[in-house]
Length: 153
Image 1 (cartoon, rainbow, N blue to C red):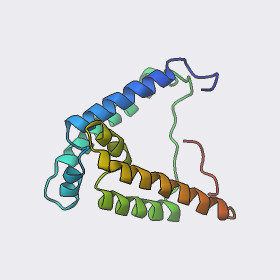
Image 2 (tube, rainbow, N blue to C red):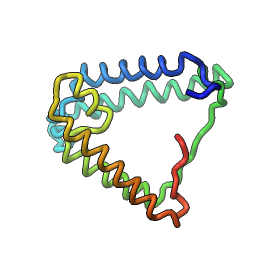
Image 3 (cartoon, rainbow, N blue to C red):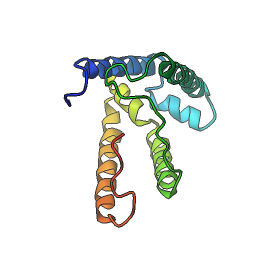
Image 4 (cartoon, rainbow, N blue to C red):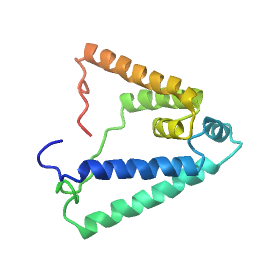
């Protein structure tokens, strides 16, 4: 932890993760069969959960900068970080979507799935780590591009 962060920063991250995981488990979105049913247009519950989360996040991102000059725990000013919509976004998003469809779960829900006793999901989590490692190796070999090292988001 860097010295410019509030001591409660890591606790806030833990509490946020607990709330996120509980919400995924409570809404049954940590079950791959629910996600597969969404992707095959049989159940649209995931759409409503994502829409609800987007509304809450949208309200927070709209309200907080109007109430405070900076983030409560870091003090950094609020601002937009625009990312380019380029080839890397298209290819990465496509690969992510294929993995999401094959595994039936996205990364956040995969970890929450462990909390509801789905130990088989460890294969998907292992695959995510291997895929991220392979992408890192591939990117380090192609350092001639402008996007050789992504910014720390």
